[in-house]
Image (cartoon, one colour):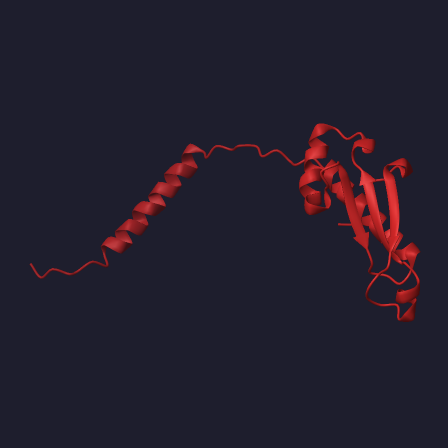
Length: 137
């Protein structure tokens, strides 16, 4: 199954901040702030209540009290790659939040299936009863 496209995020809902990153990059890490902290205002997205609650659960600790999702990306050596990674991750969160869970349809076991199950239990019961102590009466 191919991966679905991430949900588009309006630019007015995004706030970016660049930080000094750790990890790969050599001396570049010490000189340039390549890590990005992406902050998305959830209220600016105007989500319906169901999507909002699913997003809150999916985001977990990344969801702040003031209604923002904060994602930090520092895996790559360049700002551009980290920006793209952070936006991809937030877009994926939004896409998953927009998926409505499939409602389970209750099913009823048919009468013949019940009878067949009970017959099987009776047969098994007979087999187990036959394993008892043998009396020499």
